[in-house]
Every structure is written in structure tokens, then in C-alpha cells.
Length: 226
Image (tube, rainbow, N blue to C red; front, side, top):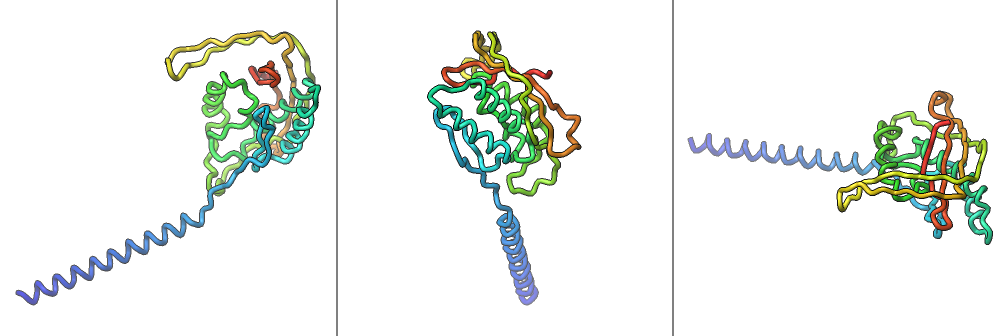
């Protein structure tokens, strides 16, 4: 009896050692697999500090070109606001409607150009519509075809009075706050664009953008389909 118990203990110890070795192997192997997945490193490569604009390393080449043009326009002692409105219209369209460089569905493009009190509503709507089905690309292994804007054309620009009115939820009071105002010199910009791939030819390709002054900065307050 004592001999049988002894053998049972030995067998039990061996089984425990085997189980421990398997666990260690799985742990090490799993860490190796995870270690091979490198998180996408997106950094800010340039800034226009006074206006809060930044250039990210994953921006398209066309966007980078426009960003540099915008820097030059905003450096001027007397800013050409019509040219300013044209450039940020093109940049907004490229950044918002290009999805193939976004990390997740929460990585919303164009938010730097949106009037800040409207931003929460803008982001929420984008996440629930155009960005809703964007898969994560944190590790750079996304297998999903997504649109990229190729070129944006400014079809017309007008400088006119514009009245805006909207409400947003105050997160502290949980009550709606109303924002309204009139800009006598707002910019209304008609734009059209195309995509790198023809498979997105039936996607939205035109819009009317409304910009008002926020001190010396132009901010987007409305987007309409033509």
C-alpha cells in the first residue's frame, strides 16, 4: 500500500511538472507573438502653434503640401482670409474623408478645423456614421479596404453674412446649452473631390463648408451637401 501511494505521489508530481512546463511554454510563446506586433507610432511632425493646427506623420502627401501652404499664408502680417478658407476647406475634406490612414473608428479627421463648442456633436455623429465600420489598425495589420481622398477642388468662395445656431449638452450640468451668433464676413466654400480608387466613386464627393471667425481663426460651423 505504501509503495502504491509513493508511486501515485511521483506520478502526481510528474503531471504537475508537465502542466507547469506547458504553461510556461504557452506564456513565452504568446509573449513572442504579441511582441512581434508593433504598435503604430504616429507623431506630430509640425505645428502652427497660434492656430492650434498640427501635422501628423500619417497625413497624406497632398495634406502635407497644403499644410505648408497654410503656414505661409498665416505667417503674413495681413492674412488673406479667402486663401485661408480655401486651404482649410481642402485640408478638412482630405483629413475627414480619408479613412485608410486612421488607427481606429475614434480617430476622427478634420477636428482641428471644427468650432470647439460643436466638436462633441461632430465627433459623435462621425463615429456613428462615416467612421462606424473602420477596423482597428493599432498594430498595422488591418485587412480592410478604405477610401483615400486624392484631390480636392475649390469650386467657389463667397464672403457673406451667416447666422449659426445649435445646442450642445453641458457635461457638468447635463443640460442643453444654446450657441448662436452672426458673422458678417463668413466664408462659404464649395468643394468637390475624388478618391484614389474608383471603387469609391459613389461616395460623397462634394459639399458646401461654412466658416466663421473665432478671433483671428476661421472655424467650421456647418457642412452641407450640394
